Length: 239
Image 1 (tube, rainbow, N blue to C red):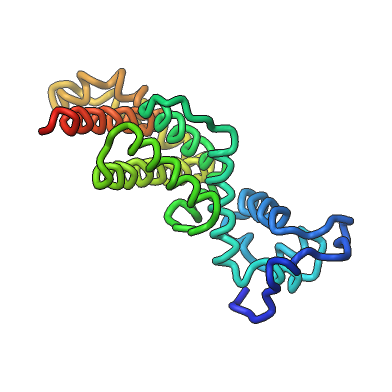
Image 2 (image 1 turned 120 degrees about the vertical axis):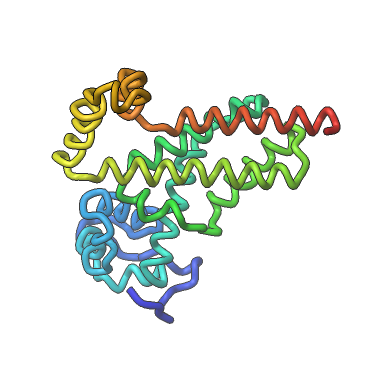
């Protein structure tokens, strides 16, 4: 889909007639359909022809809502952020609130691994993302972090979460056989290396194999929160 002057103003976008499938087009319906198609076909789903077929409408109707596929992808990214925030409630405990947000965000992206790989690096500038930035900075400032520290910790928190989401998503989209071979490598290779030649691997093998079978994000998140708490203590003590 290329840039087009056919984009219709927001107040005139609603399709008056139902599609061939009996539904009325909307931005939300298009986004949800794209998420489904990406889950089934990956980046190949981002074509107007495939989207039109799935929606039961002329592909050109999509131009009434999105200028091009990049704008559509940004909308998908913003939808994933919005789903993370949908049922989240602040508790007033900054570490618990950030932990909850981070784990929710990570899990939500992994529920849509193909979409995660396409969207984790994007800045949308849209409603849900703006709300997320405001929320996280608010948590940090209310905890007592100065503005510079709040911005820096926000940066680390979000980049860490999205980086692990992209990394773990890339594993989930591997063919089943490739995933099985990777798991076998830890169990059949690393766990069997001789201590005489690889003493550190041999000593840690039981926990290493177990650790590498799951995401490192929860542990990394705790390390980041602990470092932030230490920094906050320094700020409050005047150091």
